[in-house]
Structures are given as structure tokens and as C-alpha cells.
Image (cartoon, rainbow, N blue to C red; front, side, top):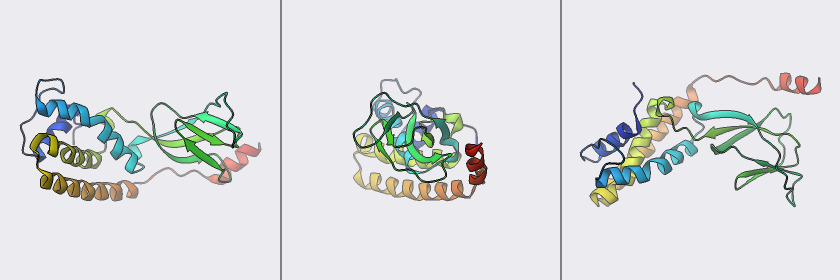
Length: 188
């Protein structure tokens, strides 16, 4: 499938509602206004629900100057951070806590794998787009149609599409990290 633009994803959602399409998110229409308002929060919500293969990054974090009371170090999370998946490069599972925009731990160096805020629609997985368009349609149902029953039906379809997408995403091969190699590299 060819990558869809933000407007095209909104149009898929509107079509699922039986509504006319839009040409732009800034046009003077009720549908465009609500699509523009609801698109980003719902995209981030679907990204947060699953460790999508297309939406993962690994990054070393920088220590913040402020020392928390209950941990030795505070690290600022990346600006595009959505969800923490793992601390990488450690041989044990360190004690840590996510608090606001920070990761608190007793480790002096931290590298994380995380779900990031993918805005470029060309990177979206097709099944992610389908699930996201169902969620967006369910969120648009009340402000555009006032139909609560349709909203519930579309939300149920979102859950089914999300479950299917998650299963497909989980079954795709991923590069694995050899923990012994990481451990040996750390010793050298």
C-alpha cells in the first residue's frame, strides 16, 4: 500500500463514518476542524499501545544536573519519547522510574529503547494506519454525527484492528541483541 498523508488518513476515518472527505486540515469545515484537533493525540495513543517495529529508537540519555532525592541520577527523556521499552546494554535489570519527562535511576549511564513520536506517515505500517483510522473515526463520531452507537461500533472495530496489527507486528523478525557480547564488550 502506498503511504497515506494525514489528510488521506482523516478521509479514511471520515469514510468509515459515511461523511464527505476533506481537502485540507485547515479548510473551513466541521470535519476538517475535528480531524485537525483529534489527529495527533489519537496517533500518539495508538503508538503508545504497542511496541511498533517502525516506531522504535535506541538512544543514550544525558544526565540532568538535578539529583533526585530517591535516586542517584536523573536523565532527560528524548523530546519524541512516547513509551519506554527497555534499558539496553545492561547485564542486570536496574532499578529505575519514569517520572514526567525524566528517567530516574542509580545507573550513571543509560541507553534506552523506546517508541518515538512518528509523525511521518510514510513510515507507518499499513495495519497501524487501519487501526488508527478506526480510532480516529470513533473519536470523530460524536462531534460530527452525534451518534454514540456508531462511536461504540467504530471503537470495537478499532480494538479488533489493533489486535490484528499487534499480532502481525509481533510475528515479524527482529534483530536480537546478544547479551553476552554486550557483557563482554562492557568488560573490555
